[in-house]
Image (cartoon, rainbow, N blue to C red; front, side, top):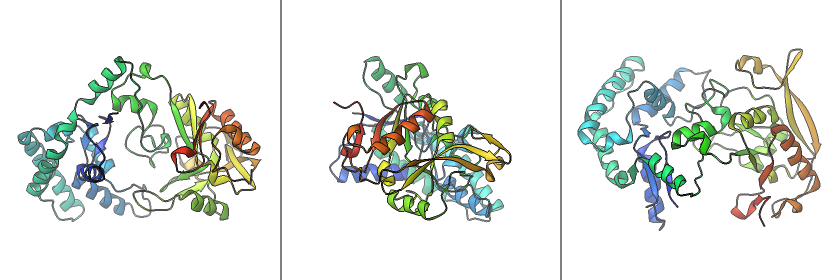
Length: 363
């Protein structure tokens, strides 16, 4: 098995190297890790600018994770970002990094009154980290295409979620890339015509971190119960996630956008204790109902959800290992989701362990 970090990813080298070292210390072989030479780098000035810009927007924050991804993608789009391939030529790295640090230091000091970054210290740190990842850096799109030509199985995974897509998500409360099937193809160097199936991963309820409208949000005890049972806290920030009923409007939009052929529904067991379970089937804005997520989010700020309620199953599902072991009302809930999204539910998660992922087609 080979693991590939593709060209569409922005990489914070210190974090990546730390994780790889941790795996090696636990006796895990990391020789199968490959890193695209075209991937862009997240550098310390990106993270600092991310923090300062979010502070500047006090009261109107985007809700960024403060990892520097937005500023790194901004540099990429502006065509002056540093890439992994630049690390392989120290003289190229020094020249490009000097230009960027000079520009970013001017911005940090003149706009935010922040102290400048030390160019030499950053350069030396990058050189040191490059020694660790050097053997992993290759044109990964070639490896992926050769694997496809040999008839091998290739799985491409997107980070985040489709409603955070820079074009079709809830802008501006989005990420800075395209976490969709199309974006995955672009990042991995795969043509859309080469994709055989698209698995859409959905929670059995809705969650959101940070700002932005969420019509199906649950602000009372039920929302808190789902948050506690689902352990809904952000991995990077530790912030509690907002929770709500399954939003079939947003889900259907992402299903169509991604051309989903199969659904993986996770965290079904979180809903085991509820008497009834809601599905948001539309949004009411003033005196009209709509069945899509509008581009202008101000329209959604005062929207109320059109809800359909199904009876809960009030049974523990964590021991189920096949669809026929799921309660009848749970199966009815899955069928309702299938009808809204236009794709079959193949996988259902009823707990965090591998054996708690039910495959409908498993023999």
